[in-house]
Image 1 (cartoon, rainbow, N blue to C red):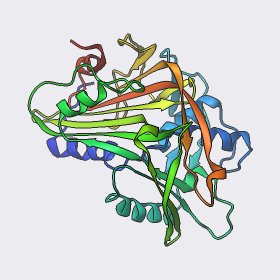
Image 2 (image 1 turned 90 degrees about the vertical axis):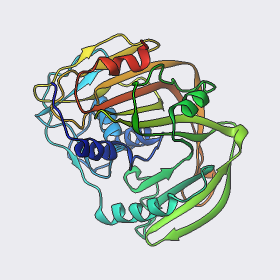
Image 3 (image 1 turned 180 degrees about the vertical axis):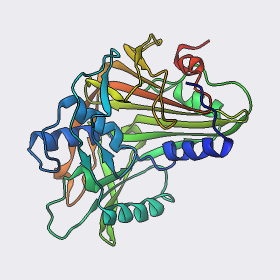
Length: 329
């Protein structure tokens, strides 16, 4: 598919992909844990592949849609499932979404070395571990040019940096590298408080305890294409790479340094991932989750064994350059 979009449409698509994304490395496990505990947010039991696919969708907004008869999951070998699923919808509470937006605006000015956890307080205390009601704003480093980003990433062992980025004049470039605390380290609590129905804790991570666990790159070219690259540590190898809508196909491809990669050559929506990849880490990475409410007894050390990378291209959908980003020239 080679659908042209205007510069304004490209910028709007790029904004939707990148501007409000909030990193949360424990999101997938939270969803899986809720399923294992028998939560009743949906009407039927989810398969593990659907849960993992939904986890990826939940990183993109406050309303998540499960698989319907118009959608299929695709695994890391490019194989799609054959069974249609009944509609499953998990809707975000407007009050929660509004409170998170208020806190997001406040946290936009926080120092980059701080990590903030927040939760929606319904007055009962029962939503403490509800992943749909919690959010995190990790410590980060921000880069506004390609050279500085790639130079920094050359010293990062936990994540794979692009080996090639599109050539030409950039209209915009932004990269953010997010940090969590290593399992053997600790978060320094700076402040606790509330903003309306939202409670929050602010932490600082000592530099020696900080581990890069995720990055997001968004760039637009003057000739009209745009790209979003999202790399994140993942707790285990999942069955699902992403979702396919009716009529779309998936193709297993080879990408340097990746154990699995799936290309989606005929996406019907300009909003969907064009390439999904995964690799197993040489050594698992342990990260500590900062606590949400009352004390460090809620800290949780998790082990991450994989890295997942997703690439989206806006503009023309000729995807040779998407494959080059990690394969090189």
